[in-house]
Length: 107
Image (cartoon, rainbow, N blue to C red; front, side, top):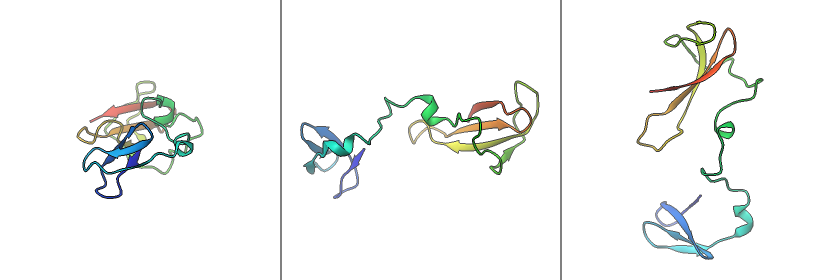
């Protein structure tokens, strides 16, 4: 994603240029840098959700208002991540403190 230096709005690719969707400013595209960019269409859940079995949930905040579907424990570590547009509430990702089961919680 490229942002306009003049107004800070998101720029869109048009041919060999980035063009600001707000003020119309443009700048040349460096296609070598684009190889490092990841678009949301290309992301998979494994890139958004912490799926590594050895992920460090320990030490993160704990929730007691949840219930693990696998073991029934009512305590889980969690973190919050914005997975949708800014006008949508964030998603909480949980890991059971007893059995390690993982799930999402939507507000």
